[in-house]
Length: 317
Image (tube, rainbow, N blue to C red; front, side, top):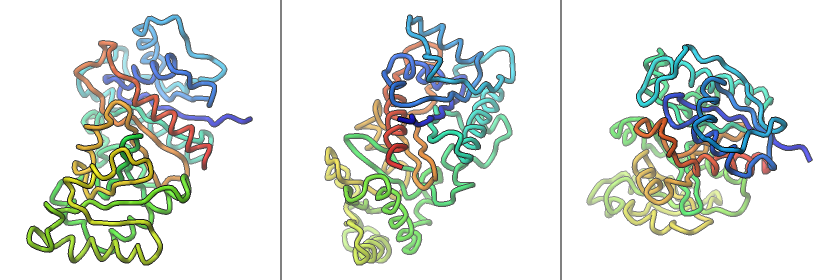
């Protein structure tokens, strides 16, 4: 059997990305299911391997390093730095290029610092998903766990801009595209519940009219087309309705509406999944955790789940 080739970027060298990458590959039984290409600097990886202090090593036949030299002699940790921003962006840029060419079948990205990217002169890119959207305009940010699954209609924008984007046709297009992508991976399994924008989902116009005039008509149009979608429901109860149900996806209308309940419930094992790409892309659901970088205490379970999901969905694709 031909094993999928999973590319992994090690993220910001000053955060916990390199640590959770090394721990996931050394301490977890993942290499029997795939081959891996790490996009990073040997200088950074060797630091983490030495810090791990484990008798286990990378199996050389299953894990390759695509060496991208670090732009400096020492690696600062614990805060955003220009060199680290330049390095993490270069890792990611090269990995995306190889994924688009088909040299790797899936991409797992360790956390980056948006501020480090800014210091390195990489502006107007809040994160991985926005970079991918330059090539794939219908990319969807999705958060996956056993406990809860959440799709975000909008993500790294201000709350005011997120509210302004709630229009009937863009919502309908988003619902259709989400449904299409999930059906490709898991046909016939999932139904969808839409969170309202306002308290009590607007309470029939008493607390806001977006539900009445925009969200409900969009949901009804998709129901007519056969999509198993319902809502909008009050946002303070819709996540409880979906909690623990393996066949239900919540559609959140903006970043924090979806991410606060998701990270409360599944922070240690949740996965950030980008839909709408010709290849699978996943990431742990946490950030760089500068406050614990270099201490050897970072929890690598989310990284493990991100790699597992990348392998699983690559087989399905």
